[in-house]
Every structure is written in C-alpha cells, then in structure tokens.
Length: 256
Image (cartoon, rainbow, N blue to C red):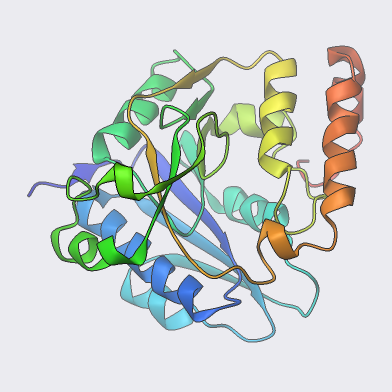
C-alpha cells in the first residue's frame, strides 16, 4: 500500500507520560498505525522521572523530547515544546491512543494548507472507545473497517479532543496551548473556545474517531487532582470578550 506523503506539510505532536502498561501498548499501536499509513513528522514530548519511550521513538523514527521531572504531567507544556520544534505549515495535537482513517488526516491537512481552515477536527465529533477485543485485528491489518462501532462506547458525540490540527503560524498567534492547565481535563474545551473567540476558521471532516481503551492512571481526567483548577481556567476564558481574551493571551510567555 502506498503511504500518504505529508512530510513537507504535517507534524504530529504527542505529549506523553507512561503511567500504566496500557499507555505503552497504545502508543506502540498508534505509532505503528501512523508509520504504516503516512510518511510524516512525529515529535513525542515525554515527561517522567525516567524515559520509557526512548527506544520506541528510535524504532519508529520519531523525534524525542524528554523532560526529566517528578512534577505532575503538563500536557499543554509538552505539546508546546514539540510545536516549537516543528517547521511544517500544519501541526496536530495528537493523543497517544487515537486512530483515524488516512483520508481524514489528508482532508484536514488539505483544508489548512489551502486556507479553507486554520483549525480542523479531523473527525465528525463522534469519539468512540474501542475495546481490547479489536486490538489484534487493528494491529495486524492496520485497518478500522473490522471495528464494529456498535460494540464500542460512544464517549462523546460532539468531542473537541483526541486530535486537533492547526495552521502552525495561527496556532502561535492565538497563544498555543495554555500551559496553566494541569494534566488533562477542560484543556480541549479551552482551545476550542479560545480559538473560536479569536476568529479562527474552524472545520470538521467526515467519519468518527477511534480511541484505544486503557486503564485510567495519573494522566487521566478521572484521577486529576487539579480538575477544578482546569475547569475554572476554562470558565475564565469563556467569560471573556474577544478583546479581553486577546489582551489576556498577550500576557502569556510560552508562545513568544
């Protein structure tokens, strides 16, 4: 099968901390799937007390950024560090356990490079959690057609998480990822609200998103002790006018 060549157009940014063996398994499956379908740049930004992804990054030819830290996982800092290394016109926040049809990624990339959009969700909003019973067939065939969505849990029919793709210059103009957020929870909603309020051209593509199920550890919404902080940061952005928001973003240091 011929790979889609997106090397000059797209860089996939993955921020990760391996807090469970399931995470390691899913990252391997995601990277294997991406490398099978695409010739594309992948940058993995890892935060941990010791690297668990060095060898995997080498095997899958990913650029590896490692931050040795015992601090709580800062996903947004991770994607920003990776984004600063990117040189392509399109970048993607890409969770380490997400699969999409190749056509979805290609369509989203084209929408941004053509100027039709500045932010694209490369799926229709439906976020499905794929149970382990389908993992072997996905890994063997590198296809999603054998996954019966009736046997998958629909997490959200209007999701703004998982994968989001940006015009790289516009990404930094709007502040990049908000590093005040801790771990995961409300950061995807904040990006959607902020970019929309700042006048971003936003689109979606066809088809759903497939999420590889996993145990929930420290880097999950369910176990984030900072979830109320994240919620309040999101609500603060939601209450601002576009003018107030622009002034607020101008005070951030990480995007300068």
